[in-house]
Length: 310
Image 1 (cartoon, helix red, strand yellow):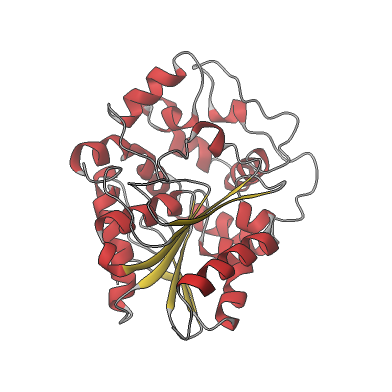
Image 2: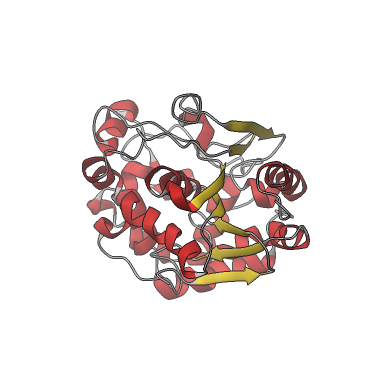
Protein backbone atom coordinates (compact mmCIF):
# COMPACT_ATOMS: atom_id res chain seq x y z
CA UNK A 1 0.00 0.00 0.00
CA UNK A 2 1.34 3.43 -0.93
CA UNK A 3 -0.10 5.19 2.12
CA UNK A 4 0.41 4.18 5.74
CA UNK A 5 -2.77 3.61 7.73
CA UNK A 6 -3.10 5.51 10.98
CA UNK A 7 -6.45 3.92 11.86
CA UNK A 8 -7.95 0.58 10.78
CA UNK A 9 -10.94 -0.60 12.82
CA UNK A 10 -14.12 -2.56 12.34
CA UNK A 11 -15.50 -4.66 9.52
CA UNK A 12 -18.05 -4.19 6.77
CA UNK A 13 -18.20 -1.68 3.93
CA UNK A 14 -15.10 0.48 3.78
CA UNK A 15 -15.07 4.14 4.87
CA UNK A 16 -11.83 6.04 4.20
CA UNK A 17 -11.34 9.17 6.34
CA UNK A 18 -8.76 11.58 4.92
CA UNK A 19 -7.12 14.25 7.07
CA UNK A 20 -6.04 17.75 6.09
CA UNK A 21 -3.36 20.32 6.97
CA UNK A 22 -1.78 20.47 9.48
CA UNK A 23 -3.43 17.36 10.84
CA UNK A 24 -3.03 13.62 11.29
CA UNK A 25 -5.44 10.66 11.06
CA UNK A 26 -6.41 10.99 14.74
CA UNK A 27 -8.26 14.22 13.87
CA UNK A 28 -11.13 11.79 13.06
CA UNK A 29 -11.16 10.16 16.50
CA UNK A 30 -14.71 11.32 17.29
CA UNK A 31 -16.11 9.72 14.13
CA UNK A 32 -14.34 6.34 14.17
CA UNK A 33 -16.26 4.52 16.91
CA UNK A 34 -19.76 5.61 15.78
CA UNK A 35 -18.98 4.46 12.23
CA UNK A 36 -17.57 1.14 13.43
CA UNK A 37 -20.63 0.66 15.65
CA UNK A 38 -22.83 1.37 12.62
CA UNK A 39 -21.26 -1.54 10.76
CA UNK A 40 -18.38 -0.08 8.76
CA UNK A 41 -14.69 -0.77 8.45
CA UNK A 42 -13.00 2.58 9.04
CA UNK A 43 -9.49 3.38 7.87
CA UNK A 44 -7.69 6.71 8.04
CA UNK A 45 -4.48 6.95 6.00
CA UNK A 46 -1.58 9.34 6.44
CA UNK A 47 -1.45 11.45 3.30
CA UNK A 48 1.71 11.35 1.24
CA UNK A 49 4.23 13.72 2.81
CA UNK A 50 2.85 13.15 6.32
CA UNK A 51 4.02 10.86 9.09
CA UNK A 52 5.03 7.33 8.00
CA UNK A 53 3.62 7.67 4.45
CA UNK A 54 6.17 8.31 1.68
CA UNK A 55 8.10 11.54 2.21
CA UNK A 56 7.72 14.34 -0.32
CA UNK A 57 10.29 16.95 -1.29
CA UNK A 58 9.17 17.47 -4.89
CA UNK A 59 5.68 18.99 -5.28
CA UNK A 60 5.31 17.03 -8.52
CA UNK A 61 4.75 13.96 -6.35
CA UNK A 62 1.49 15.33 -4.94
CA UNK A 63 -0.31 16.57 -8.01
CA UNK A 64 -3.93 15.47 -7.93
CA UNK A 65 -3.49 12.54 -10.30
CA UNK A 66 -1.02 10.99 -7.83
CA UNK A 67 -3.32 11.85 -4.92
CA UNK A 68 -6.29 10.14 -6.60
CA UNK A 69 -4.21 7.04 -7.29
CA UNK A 70 -3.03 6.97 -3.66
CA UNK A 71 -6.57 7.00 -2.32
CA UNK A 72 -7.86 4.51 -4.89
CA UNK A 73 -5.06 2.17 -3.81
CA UNK A 74 -6.36 2.18 -0.24
CA UNK A 75 -9.54 0.39 -1.35
CA UNK A 76 -7.72 -1.76 -3.90
CA UNK A 77 -5.07 -3.00 -1.51
CA UNK A 78 -7.62 -3.82 1.20
CA UNK A 79 -9.62 -5.88 -1.29
CA UNK A 80 -12.59 -3.55 -1.79
CA UNK A 81 -14.07 -2.69 -5.15
CA UNK A 82 -15.34 0.61 -3.77
CA UNK A 83 -15.32 2.73 -0.63
CA UNK A 84 -16.94 5.77 0.89
CA UNK A 85 -14.32 8.53 0.83
CA UNK A 86 -14.65 11.34 3.38
CA UNK A 87 -12.10 14.15 3.62
CA UNK A 88 -11.42 17.36 5.50
CA UNK A 89 -9.42 20.37 4.25
CA UNK A 90 -6.74 19.01 1.85
CA UNK A 91 -8.37 15.65 2.50
CA UNK A 92 -11.54 17.08 0.97
CA UNK A 93 -9.61 18.23 -2.10
CA UNK A 94 -8.14 14.72 -2.23
CA UNK A 95 -11.51 12.95 -2.15
CA UNK A 96 -12.86 15.31 -4.81
CA UNK A 97 -9.82 14.21 -6.86
CA UNK A 98 -10.47 10.50 -6.46
CA UNK A 99 -14.13 11.12 -7.25
CA UNK A 100 -13.15 12.81 -10.51
CA UNK A 101 -10.11 10.82 -11.61
CA UNK A 102 -10.74 7.34 -10.15
CA UNK A 103 -14.54 7.24 -9.90
CA UNK A 104 -14.71 3.47 -10.22
CA UNK A 105 -13.44 3.22 -6.62
CA UNK A 106 -15.87 5.75 -5.09
CA UNK A 107 -19.28 4.61 -3.89
CA UNK A 108 -20.14 7.88 -2.12
CA UNK A 109 -18.16 10.99 -1.18
CA UNK A 110 -18.18 13.36 1.77
CA UNK A 111 -16.18 16.60 1.82
CA UNK A 112 -15.69 18.91 4.79
CA UNK A 113 -14.56 22.54 4.69
CA UNK A 114 -13.29 22.54 1.07
CA UNK A 115 -15.96 22.32 -1.65
CA UNK A 116 -15.58 21.11 -5.20
CA UNK A 117 -13.91 23.99 -7.04
CA UNK A 118 -13.80 24.44 -10.77
CA UNK A 119 -10.67 24.94 -12.83
CA UNK A 120 -9.42 28.54 -12.78
CA UNK A 121 -8.78 30.33 -16.07
CA UNK A 122 -5.13 30.91 -15.12
CA UNK A 123 -2.72 28.91 -12.92
CA UNK A 124 -3.99 29.05 -9.31
CA UNK A 125 -1.00 30.81 -7.73
CA UNK A 126 -1.08 33.52 -10.40
CA UNK A 127 -4.81 33.82 -9.84
CA UNK A 128 -4.29 34.20 -6.08
CA UNK A 129 -1.74 36.95 -6.68
CA UNK A 130 -4.30 38.70 -8.85
CA UNK A 131 -7.08 38.36 -6.28
CA UNK A 132 -5.07 39.28 -3.19
CA UNK A 133 -2.79 41.83 -4.89
CA UNK A 134 -1.22 43.84 -2.05
CA UNK A 135 -2.74 41.71 0.75
CA UNK A 136 -1.21 38.79 2.62
CA UNK A 137 -2.51 35.32 1.83
CA UNK A 138 -1.06 32.24 3.45
CA UNK A 139 -0.99 30.10 0.29
CA UNK A 140 1.13 32.72 -1.46
CA UNK A 141 3.48 32.81 1.53
CA UNK A 142 3.82 29.02 1.37
CA UNK A 143 4.77 29.37 -2.31
CA UNK A 144 7.39 32.08 -1.72
CA UNK A 145 10.88 30.48 -1.51
CA UNK A 146 12.20 33.58 0.24
CA UNK A 147 9.73 33.06 3.10
CA UNK A 148 11.39 29.79 4.22
CA UNK A 149 7.99 28.67 5.45
CA UNK A 150 9.16 25.14 6.22
CA UNK A 151 11.75 26.38 8.69
CA UNK A 152 9.50 29.03 10.21
CA UNK A 153 6.71 26.55 10.96
CA UNK A 154 9.09 23.89 12.26
CA UNK A 155 10.96 26.22 14.65
CA UNK A 156 8.32 25.57 17.34
CA UNK A 157 5.94 22.85 16.16
CA UNK A 158 3.67 22.99 19.21
CA UNK A 159 3.28 26.77 18.96
CA UNK A 160 2.61 26.52 15.21
CA UNK A 161 -0.11 23.94 15.65
CA UNK A 162 -1.78 25.66 18.59
CA UNK A 163 -1.84 29.03 16.83
CA UNK A 164 -3.15 27.48 13.60
CA UNK A 165 -5.90 25.57 15.35
CA UNK A 166 -6.89 28.59 17.44
CA UNK A 167 -6.85 31.14 14.62
CA UNK A 168 -8.94 29.03 12.23
CA UNK A 169 -11.40 27.87 14.86
CA UNK A 170 -14.90 29.18 15.39
CA UNK A 171 -13.59 31.44 18.19
CA UNK A 172 -10.28 32.88 16.95
CA UNK A 173 -8.06 34.79 19.37
CA UNK A 174 -8.49 38.55 19.46
CA UNK A 175 -4.88 38.95 18.32
CA UNK A 176 -5.45 37.09 15.01
CA UNK A 177 -5.16 39.39 12.00
CA UNK A 178 -6.97 38.82 8.71
CA UNK A 179 -6.13 42.01 6.80
CA UNK A 180 -2.36 42.26 6.43
CA UNK A 181 -0.04 43.67 3.76
CA UNK A 182 1.56 41.28 1.26
CA UNK A 183 4.89 41.68 3.05
CA UNK A 184 3.54 40.06 6.23
CA UNK A 185 4.30 36.50 7.33
CA UNK A 186 2.03 33.77 8.61
CA UNK A 187 3.26 34.45 12.13
CA UNK A 188 1.83 37.97 11.81
CA UNK A 189 -1.59 36.46 11.13
CA UNK A 190 -1.71 33.56 13.57
CA UNK A 191 -2.23 34.06 17.29
CA UNK A 192 -1.81 31.76 20.25
CA UNK A 193 -5.07 30.76 21.92
CA UNK A 194 -6.25 33.31 24.46
CA UNK A 195 -8.64 30.84 26.10
CA UNK A 196 -8.75 27.06 26.54
CA UNK A 197 -9.86 25.10 23.47
CA UNK A 198 -11.87 22.28 25.03
CA UNK A 199 -12.61 20.78 21.61
CA UNK A 200 -8.89 20.11 20.97
CA UNK A 201 -8.09 16.71 22.46
CA UNK A 202 -4.64 16.44 24.03
CA UNK A 203 -3.95 13.24 22.09
CA UNK A 204 -4.65 15.00 18.79
CA UNK A 205 -2.26 17.82 19.62
CA UNK A 206 0.46 15.49 20.86
CA UNK A 207 0.23 13.29 17.77
CA UNK A 208 0.64 16.38 15.58
CA UNK A 209 3.59 17.62 17.61
CA UNK A 210 5.23 14.22 17.35
CA UNK A 211 4.56 13.75 13.64
CA UNK A 212 5.61 17.20 12.45
CA UNK A 213 8.50 17.22 14.91
CA UNK A 214 9.84 14.12 13.16
CA UNK A 215 9.13 15.03 9.52
CA UNK A 216 8.96 18.81 9.47
CA UNK A 217 6.45 20.61 7.24
CA UNK A 218 8.06 20.28 3.80
CA UNK A 219 5.92 17.34 2.72
CA UNK A 220 2.72 19.00 3.88
CA UNK A 221 3.56 22.33 2.22
CA UNK A 222 4.33 20.51 -1.04
CA UNK A 223 0.58 20.15 -1.51
CA UNK A 224 0.27 23.94 -1.76
CA UNK A 225 3.32 24.12 -4.01
CA UNK A 226 1.72 21.61 -6.39
CA UNK A 227 -1.27 23.84 -7.16
CA UNK A 228 0.11 25.12 -10.45
CA UNK A 229 1.56 21.73 -11.39
CA UNK A 230 -1.88 20.13 -11.03
CA UNK A 231 -3.37 22.89 -13.17
CA UNK A 232 -0.78 22.23 -15.88
CA UNK A 233 -0.73 18.43 -15.78
CA UNK A 234 -4.24 17.39 -14.76
CA UNK A 235 -6.74 19.44 -16.77
CA UNK A 236 -9.49 17.04 -15.74
CA UNK A 237 -9.26 18.17 -12.11
CA UNK A 238 -11.93 20.82 -11.66
CA UNK A 239 -13.68 20.02 -14.94
CA UNK A 240 -14.76 16.38 -14.43
CA UNK A 241 -18.14 15.74 -12.78
CA UNK A 242 -18.40 13.83 -9.52
CA UNK A 243 -21.51 11.77 -10.18
CA UNK A 244 -21.75 9.64 -7.04
CA UNK A 245 -23.91 10.73 -4.08
CA UNK A 246 -22.07 13.53 -2.24
CA UNK A 247 -22.25 15.39 1.05
CA UNK A 248 -20.67 18.75 1.84
CA UNK A 249 -20.32 19.98 5.40
CA UNK A 250 -18.58 23.04 6.80
CA UNK A 251 -18.43 25.14 9.90
CA UNK A 252 -20.63 28.23 9.93
CA UNK A 253 -17.55 30.28 10.93
CA UNK A 254 -15.02 28.52 8.71
CA UNK A 255 -12.58 31.08 7.34
CA UNK A 256 -11.84 28.93 4.30
CA UNK A 257 -15.42 29.29 3.13
CA UNK A 258 -14.99 33.08 3.10
CA UNK A 259 -12.72 32.83 0.05
CA UNK A 260 -13.66 29.45 -1.46
CA UNK A 261 -16.86 29.55 -3.53
CA UNK A 262 -19.32 26.68 -3.33
CA UNK A 263 -21.13 27.49 -6.57
CA UNK A 264 -19.48 24.61 -8.49
CA UNK A 265 -21.30 22.07 -6.30
CA UNK A 266 -24.31 21.95 -8.61
CA UNK A 267 -25.09 20.21 -11.87
CA UNK A 268 -23.29 19.44 -14.07
CA UNK A 269 -20.17 19.13 -11.87
CA UNK A 270 -21.79 17.71 -8.70
CA UNK A 271 -25.22 16.56 -9.89
CA UNK A 272 -26.02 14.36 -6.87
CA UNK A 273 -25.21 16.59 -3.88
CA UNK A 274 -27.51 15.15 -1.22
CA UNK A 275 -26.79 17.72 1.51
CA UNK A 276 -24.89 20.98 2.00
CA UNK A 277 -24.63 21.47 5.77
CA UNK A 278 -23.32 24.39 7.85
CA UNK A 279 -22.62 23.58 11.49
CA UNK A 280 -23.52 26.45 13.80
CA UNK A 281 -20.65 27.99 15.73
CA UNK A 282 -17.95 25.75 14.24
CA UNK A 283 -14.84 26.96 12.49
CA UNK A 284 -12.51 25.11 10.16
CA UNK A 285 -11.90 22.05 12.38
CA UNK A 286 -15.53 21.07 12.17
CA UNK A 287 -15.28 17.34 12.96
CA UNK A 288 -13.43 18.20 16.18
CA UNK A 289 -15.17 21.45 17.14
CA UNK A 290 -18.66 20.02 16.60
CA UNK A 291 -18.23 16.24 16.70
CA UNK A 292 -21.83 15.33 17.47
CA UNK A 293 -23.33 17.40 14.65
CA UNK A 294 -20.66 16.30 12.21
CA UNK A 295 -20.98 12.62 13.08
CA UNK A 296 -24.77 12.78 12.91
CA UNK A 297 -24.71 14.33 9.44
CA UNK A 298 -22.11 11.86 8.21
CA UNK A 299 -23.78 8.75 9.58
CA UNK A 300 -27.18 9.82 8.24
CA UNK A 301 -25.69 10.39 4.80
CA UNK A 302 -23.93 7.02 4.78
CA UNK A 303 -27.02 5.20 6.08
CA UNK A 304 -29.07 6.56 3.19
CA UNK A 305 -26.51 6.08 0.42
CA UNK A 306 -24.10 3.36 1.55
CA UNK A 307 -25.79 1.21 4.18
CA UNK A 308 -23.88 -1.72 5.71
CA UNK A 309 -26.65 -4.13 4.80
CA UNK A 310 -27.08 -2.73 1.32
